[in-house]
Image 1 (tube, one colour):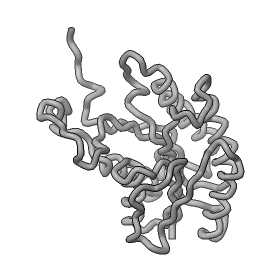
Image 2 (spheres, rainbow, N blue to C red):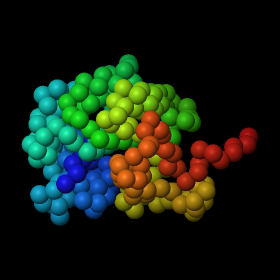
Image 3 (cartoon, rainbow, N blue to C red):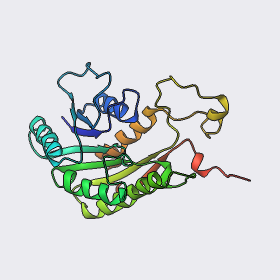
Length: 230
């Protein structure tokens, strides 16, 4: 059975939790982690899904996570790491969000296990922006550089790619989205967590995506290619 680790899974309607459900549906054993407690735990997957609270500032937390993963997987050869953690959150050095995340990934993740595939969840904010989001945009753009540099460093043993979601409704239907907001997307609707999760599952599949590494994939309904006029 393939084993995956997915970070940022606490929110039941979020992208991370949907990635967990999608991977479980495709036959993975999944370990989810988050610095926050898991809300509304998914109890319908006994034996193949587990959750751990992990503070990435604390190396002992990360070591405990990977000890647990290696124990259930029977060794350090793991199939998939999905980095869905919010990298602009205060659990990283806000003065250098890209550098601190790079250190975390290199030291705490890729150095502790042998991965077949890593998928980073970035954002279309890596490609376009608006006033007041410098830190978030810089951090998400940094993930794109991290993606191709890791692909080079880990070549022949790990494929590394990134997904850039656009507007994704993570409210679970709790927030109203207007017809105009839906129509702003070329697809006629805003994204759903399943859209991102299926892209992650595709990139993780060695049979379907085994020749893809060092790339980033925009999943935004076409918004980033829309022409804007004054």
